[in-house]
Image (tube, rainbow, N blue to C red):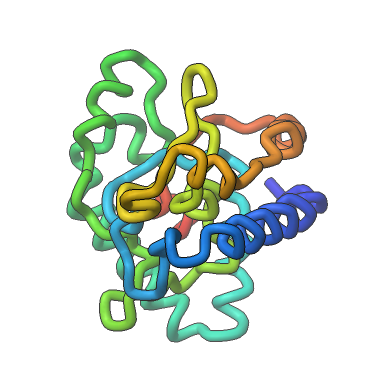
Length: 197
């Protein structure tokens, strides 16, 4: 499936929102190159994230084939190590949707480094194309039932609720949902599978 053209608009909005949230947060925001807590543990990504990663890998193969090959090697190694316990279809890379699959996913590959993470530099090798989950991890965002405000546990240590709320990062969920509808997606996956498809 081709990446919807308006995905670049979504990415620009997210980048601007993150930059503004980081400006307001100042030293409260601990996110820096080398801080990789959010780069460990499997998490679900939607079809839009997966297509963005696939498009990014096409660009990376053209611009830096050696780096692309290394990212793909790490993704294959990740699947070799964790694929047998994957709570879904390892043939398609799609996560299962049953309650049993969802429960299994809670414990799946929780400490595994993301295959996009360069272990030597602690940098993301596909940063420009990273999933939305990666783009919102750190600053305060509205999450889950009741739209509670949450942020990375390493950020805003000792900050008041008011200080945290003042740094909220708005997320354009409506635009993301519109783009997902355009894709007519089959379901969620994880980063390793998206890097190889």
